[in-house]
Length: 509
Ligand code: HXC
Image (tube, rainbow, N blue to C red; front, side, top):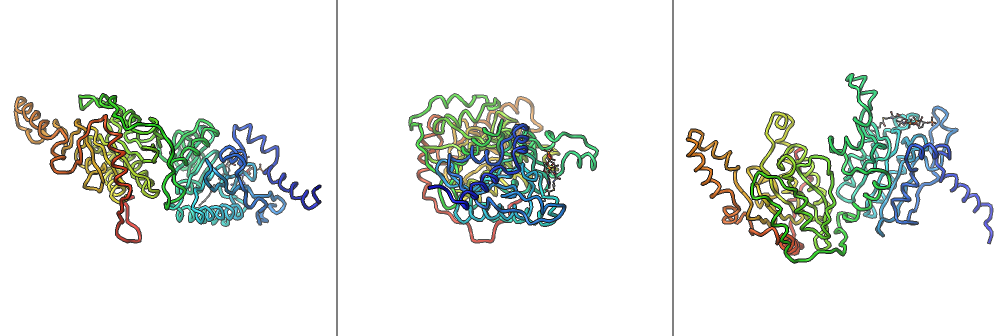
């Protein structure tokens, strides 16, 4: 049957809408090494699953000749589809339409999809590539951002929210990604800043490129704003798909279980990872990979605060969140950035029912005026708060040093951990032998100090005092770690802990 005129018109309208700002601008987008909004959605979602909403909406602005410039969709491509067969909601800014700028209509469209995602209990992904508030619309555009922020905040902890930055994202527009759970950035093509290089120069006289100020590497290594860094758009989008494989669709579900490889046999190679010399570094990721399914650890924020390692893995197919001190970087010391990184991740895992495994080897908090003046007290408190508040299963393995406040902070029994293991190499004490003897024997001779150190090591540089007090449930060999963790996870599956009813707590921010 041939199509009638009305049906043909729909096909024409769809074709026109698919072109966004037109072929010239699409060409320009490609020349800049960027995909269009539709191409990005196409790469990200399972083939043929995208269902679009509000394709024909147009803005209502009449200022500055805008009444003569209306483009179907108004610069946002939005809707829903599937990733690995699971429902997700998505919206992508279309830079070919008014520079991806956001006006009232575009914001309403985003809010509509945000609400749908919340109602259906499915993750939402935002792909940003935008010149910010649509200048011609004035305060109506700003109001639109406010509505998006509101929805971001209300949805926080209910559905996973992911932001992908693939072009400019400037000014207050940065606060929507900042309110979401994870931010992805693409190398060289994406920039985020509250005020751009020109304003910086005017106000502070500082000359800085946009890459230095707010490029992907800056936010991945220095500011900690970005969680994942992709070499190019395709790789970035594939990482989004992978992240979602570790997440439940909402806070009422568990993360998907995947068939994975790994036996319950002991892994003797793990016994050789931790050096006998307690001051020698080793790579905690080697230990993690030796324990988890398929030796696969999906690291988050690998370039920021490398003294702590966070990420997802699986044990017998079940997703776990891992928090681990990294002795290979600054001896695994805790500082402001490490505290923020760990605390936020712990809270994410707790929101979405993901058990937390902590590998601990921490000499303490980083000393110095920089740390004290910038608030290590309030930042460090976030880790305690996050661990205590978390009601998901929490299991800790002390691999070596667990000194002082850092011992308490890193998911100790005292702050609510469910199962605590320690290796024979663990040193659970107020501080290391050198520090302790310098304080206790400050007036002693060198000979007396050496003797005192030996005595201190004998008494405290081991896991057995803590084990005697029941602060460690079991001292285990490294080779047994996987088996022990699997058993502990199985045991804690039915954990039922509810914090006292309250409006919300007051985490130190
Ligand atoms: C309306 C805009 C726009 C905007 C870009 N365009 N930004 N239109 N409102 N905010 C239009 C341009 O006029 C141009 O239209 C087209 O989009 C492409 O822009 P170009 O400048 O040609 O592209 P490019 O050289 O790649 O530069 C991209 C850019 C630049 C760096 C994003 O356009 C820019 O600096 N834009 C303004 C950024 C900004 O200051 N935004 C407001 C931030 S404040 P034509 O028709 O000529 O092709 C903000 C507040 C949010 O967002 C508050 C939330 C609480």
